[in-house]
Structure formats: structure tokens, C-alpha cells
Amino acid sequence: GKGNHRHYMEKEIHEQPAVIGDTLRSFTDPSSHRLALPDLPFDFAHPETRLQLVACGTAAYACMTARYWFEQLAGIPTSTDIASEYRYRDTPMTSRELGIFVSQSGETADTLAALRHVKAQGRPTLAIVNVAESTAAREADGMLRTLAGPEIGVASTKAFTTQLSTLACLAIGAARERGCLAASREAQLMQAMDEIPARLLQVLDQDQVFRDIASMLAGAGYVLYLGRGAMYPIALEGALKLKEVSYIKAEGYAAGELKHGPIALVDEEVPVIAVAPSDHLFEKTASNLQEVAARGGKVILFSDAAGIAAMGDLPVASVTLPAVDPFVAPILMSLPVQLLAYHTAVAKGTDVDQPRNLAKSVTVE
Ligand code: F6R
Image 1 (tube, helix red, strand yellow):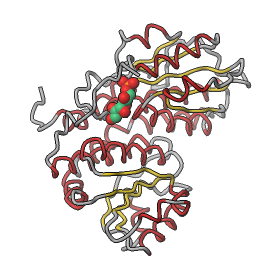
Image 2 (tube, rainbow, N blue to C red):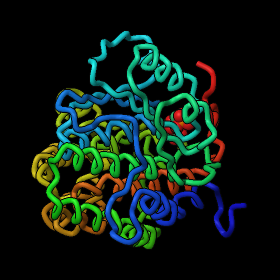
Image 3 (cartoon, helix red, strand yellow):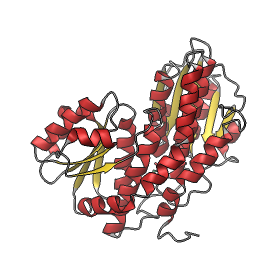
């Protein structure tokens, strides 16, 4: 049941500290606190290793986020694609390329077709799934399981953040195997991962702030989400979540693309949600937000205390999130975009758990 929550989506958002903790512990040695992934039938250490990550929808945004981790931490050239495109594109694969398929259900038709396409080329496959008995888990050469538990709400929440947590562990493991991760940095990263559940609880404690911003969004006709680096896929996920459950037209953009098109839509009516922790890209995003404000757009800033202080009174609203290691920031920043979508849908009175036209598992093409 939903316990004391109004909707499954709300319950599942609140379960995230626990299920992310479970997922991370399943990949950690309890005594040493070091990462301990199951044996996988791939050689991450080979200098020619490449990764192709494939999924649909929210799971594809988890893949896009993981690309930053695999490239920046492990130095592995990584591509991502949506399964419905990848399966028909006949992309040439290199001899050291590994296919990674991310799926909550493990039954998504396009994702399975993409997995079979990679297998047919004789390349190894890894499935990251929430349902251990699923087709993807059975057919792939290796499997990592997210421990989100059953996800009932049609809009994915805890499946997404447990996918991110699993991919982050895999990137740390790959970086270690490749010898490009100093032991001290690895310990730091594991510490930052360990602290995620506690930091997420701090975000959940700010529920009222999201309700207030949601009452502002409920009347909007269009909402723009901006993010840079690993926050770009989180901006895409924020827009997807909002459109799915509140039916408000929303788009996510890389902040640097603003002046290449979407700024034409910005006026006094348009809320612009910036997902922007105070990392090495913050100043770039800050200048994009100045451009938004100059056109009357209503900037709503999700950042940490330093980022919010730096923006002064430019945002019409802001949410102060805990400052965390930039590596884990995408996991933390997933919560605010979920909470905002949820509360906006509640304010509009839509069917949060069963949005129109959507199915939980897309088993036909
Ligand atoms: C969005 C959502 C969908 C799924 C997508 C893939 O909230 O839930 O976009 O992420 O249909 O489903 P799985 O992960 O089962 O392959």
C-alpha cells in the first residue's frame, strides 16, 4: 500500500534514501567499506575499451549521466543512445566495445532489441535492471541489479536514482581497474556515496519549499529546465517528469544551448528551472541565467548555499541543497526535480500515479 502517502509516486520518492542505501551496500564490502562489484565478464582495463550505453526514457537519462562518470573518472570513451534509434542505426562497434543496457523492468521492447543487436555482433553485454528475473537480465552476459524494490508509480523515481547509484559504482570500479583512481580519491568517493542517503533526507525535509514553488508552476504553460555537464541529463529528467505527471509543456536543455534557440521562448510567463550546484561550470550557467532574467524569465535556482549566494536576488525562488562532492551531485539533484513535478501535479489535480496515455512497461515497439 501507499502507507501514509497520498500517491505511490510520493511514497517512492521518500523511499529513495533507503533503497539507494540498499543498492550501494550491495556493491560495498561491509568491513573495508571498499567497492566490491560482482565479477563481470569484461575487461575494463584494456586501453581500447569503449562503452555503448542504451536505454529508453528516464533510464536513457541515467545512461547520459553515467557517460560523464565513465569518461571523467575512468577515461573510457562512452556513447549513449536511446534504444529505438540505436537498434536501427547499424552503428559499427569496435572490437573492445561493451554494451550496457539499463532498464527498470528489463522488458522494454526497444532496449531488448538493442541488446540482441549487440550480442549478434559478438560484443559483450551488461544489463542493469530492477527486475532480476527479467528478459534483459537473462539474455545479457552480465547483470547488476538495482534494489529499488517494486516501482508502482508510472513515472520512474527510485528506479532512476538506483540506476544512477549502480552506474556510479560501476564507473568507480572501472576507474580502479584501469589504474586511474588514486586510493585516496576512491575513499573520498565512497565516503560521498555513503553520505547520499543522509543528504537526501535533508532534501526531503524541505518538502514545503517545493510545494510553494509548485504553486507557482501550476499555472505555467511552458517550463524550461537548464543544466550543464552531468546536470544536463538531470534537466532533461526534470522536464520529462513534469510533463508526464502535470501535463505542462516542458523542455530540458543544456544551458549552453540557450542562445541557440530556446531563449526565443523566454518571456515574463516562463519559469526557468536551473539545476546548478556551485561546481566548475557554475559561472557559465550563471551567465545564462542573467540572459534569462534580462528577458523577464522567472529563474528558479536549485543549488547549494554558495551557488545561491552567488546569484544574489536574481532568482524569483531558490532551493538550498546540501553541498556534496560533484561526482554524486546528479544523484542528489534528482530529488528536487522529482519533488517539484510531484507537487505541481498535485496542485493541478492530475492522476499522478497513472498519467494519461502512459504505461509502466513498454513491451511493444
Ligand atoms: C519515465 C519512465 C519511462 C521509462 C522507460 C524505460 O518516468 O518511467 O521513460 O524510464 O519507459 O522503462 P524501463 O526502465 O523499464 O526499460
